[in-house]
Length: 111
Length: 111
Picture (tube, chains in turn purple, cyan):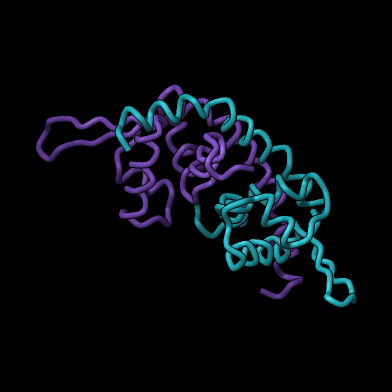
């Protein structure tokens, strides 16, 4: 596969560590930064912020700033981002269905 | 989502940068390390090796060493690894179908 072909570049984005979890979290609706972070659980603000910037740049996430004090920032999926829900959900389902087998293998190999 | 729940740990593995590309490459059949590297295109030997070790540990990839000189090492998918082909393929298809939209968004935001 040519590393510079568009679908490969897009696949790289999708395969980034936090992309899937952000898409899954936002699939349930609009969230503020802090809410999103709580939902995901173990991501640093810096890394979450980078992930969101990448997804915004790629047209998958919409960022809305409300002129309030303190300012309110909300994130939601665009139509493009929403279309990624199904395939990401398929991967998530696989993880749920096969978690026991993977954990058993991890035990066997002793890590 | 609890960061320590098994399906989350498994999802972390699946979402690792090179996991998907390794699964896609090995879905076509057994490959030697060098062949796998060529197939993926832009991965360093060190990172590919780490990815393969992780996938082996998690029971998704089988590593066979043949006692030849020079020794031959081959990688293939286990049954568990094969079962991940479908969901990964769904994500890959999405990337192919939406690459143009993502690239257009990337142009608009000027990166």
